[in-house]
Amino acid sequence: MSILSPLKKRLLYRIVPFIILFIISSFIYLFLEKGILGSATHYPSTNNPYNFTNSIIISIISATLFGLIIGSFEVLYFSKFFSSKSFIKKIIYKIAFYITVVIIFLISTATISFIVEFNTNLFDKNVWINLRNFVTNIAFFSIILYIIATIGFSLFYLEVSDNIGQEVLFNFFTGKYHKPIEEERIFMFLDMKSSTTIAEKLGHVKYFEMLAEYYSDLSNAIVKHQGLVYQYVGDEVVVSWTLNKGLKSDNCIYCFYSMQEALKKQSPKYLERFGVLPTFKAGFHCGMITAGEIGTIKKDIVFTGDVLNTTARIQGLCNTYEQVILISDDLVQKLKMNSSFTYKTIDKTSLRGKNEQMELFTIS
Image 1: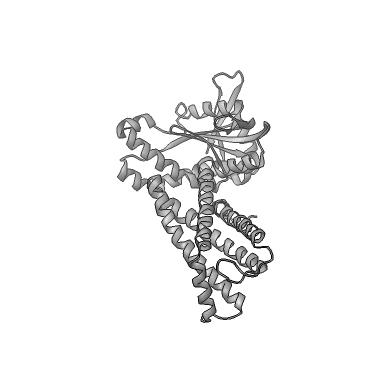
Image 2 (image 1 turned 45 degrees about the horizontal axis):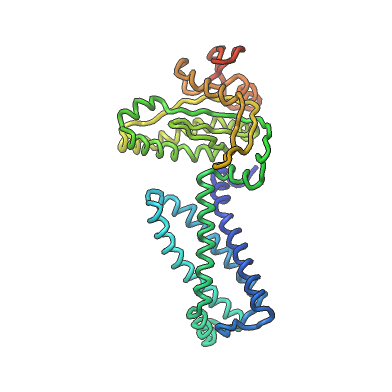
């Protein structure tokens, strides 16, 4: 059994790249510096002592700590704190904060480095003389610029990851879908109930604001139950699982009820700000799809197959049968093997565009 929950894993996977990027960046800087200084034992510009071995140890420690600090601030605090700020304001505030942190960090690291190099303590005047030489030299400002550039690249990576999804970005890097592959997946098509009426009542701008809150409040439930957001289509979200992840511990079904609970907890917010509490209905199905990278101007990982059309049609029957959740017979037969839910037959029906009938179930 995994020690970390999916939510904690996601946080960790978002922070770790900062650490890796800072370590890689520090090694690039170290070896460029070594190539320039060669066998020198002092920095020419400041006459401060230079020791390549000590620099490696200090760089690894400082890069790990700095990457952890920056990553933690970004993921745990700044992503929420600056969510309502414009892009320009977000960049200005972050740069001001990080420059301050970088300066404090560099001065602290340099002080520790001089203490180690001279095998002395903080109150030795040689430490303070070398520190003064360091912070008044152009090398100090070049290091600041180099670190800020590394932070900028890290922030860019985080933005890309958040926009296209961690799993999708990872699949791009590994090339999993570079060539089309077939795999069996579970799909949930989740649609907001009475969305047209709500949009007319609120107006387009207010409705869009509610939709943003709605998707945000549903996201933790999707991550918690190991789902992948495949698409947002208007007021509909398509969530997908690999067969193993979706069946494990009834993840795909529990995700639906976790999403209901998430909205219920946020009901005061919706009623106060929008005067309505959004609810949803969902259709579930599973089957083989073909997945692969597609596009020239904009690349994306696309799933194709009859299973998507069928799931959309199952979801469309929720109103007909007055149910909030409908599940195909194909998926129920797989879930029943180890499921904690009881499934109730609703009807056998012919879906539009399909010849054979499909039995539909709901949760009893």
